[in-house]
Length: 98
Image (tube, rainbow, N blue to C red):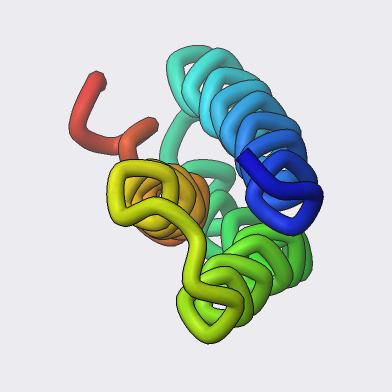
């Protein structure tokens, strides 16, 4: 595994951890919120989307590893992790778990 793939995996895992913790915090706050406060959680969720940059950075590094002719398994792993870190953050999992 080359350096670019390792960096991409590490960045993806950091992004997944951050996205999961953000979703958990939103879920915990949404559980105790009532009425008007619940409608503000959509705005709070939009404010957290700045962290998508982490997943996009990992995705770009995954694309670069394709051009560097790295192993296909590694490329699939890095692409999957980067897309997962973006999806966890974009999806409103805290509403689904409610």
